[in-house]
Image (cartoon, rainbow, N blue to C red; front, side):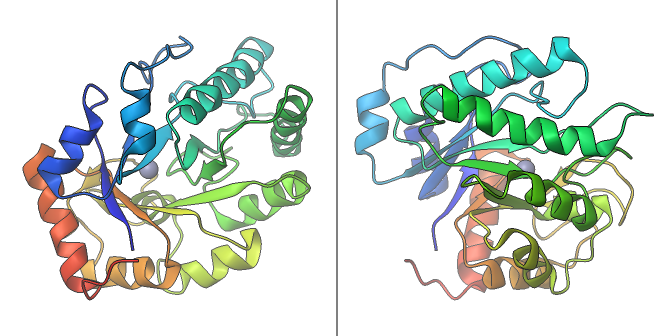
Length: 261
Ligand SMILES: [Zn+2]
């Protein structure tokens, strides 16, 4: 099982080495900004690396919204990041499920997701697997709880869409972790990546504050059980830099039995 961390984008391979990580995730541009990513000077090194590379789309991306001035640029930005991710040989592009505004019909959000994949298909495809990630908060989210996720997958099912399960988001979002993998797979048929995070906040708090794996409000054994059941690559998005994340990676290797695949 590949285990890695979300790292600073300046030198991801050095960050991987400092954590003994065999996967990294990073942003290609300011996560709060609308800038399309520039080609990276280390693209050849990243493509050739033993370390698996994942890209996280900017947080501002919300392809579900009914607000044209957010949705249209979000589609373009997502496609631009997919192109950037393909250029560095990334295994996937992770993007949050997004939401509609209060008072809007969630059905429109799901259909906007379908249109996003249709738009990409008309423009040559995304070029890397797009992994939709579950989110922690909001009453109008497309991928907070499994009932919404099922409707989202009904909408995008004709496309090859991946799923990234964030354990902190599930817990804070109000989904029990016990047997969660089975319930998710009943909806999506797949889990492509785990974001392994503990939560500083309570179950169903709707808050998104990650904690180190042995801390936080989730029983670490339950985290390990979810990760083992998913059988997917793992990225920790936990605090503490190389020391904190390196300890989390070591914790997982120890508790998952230390086998690599
Ligand atoms: Zn995450």
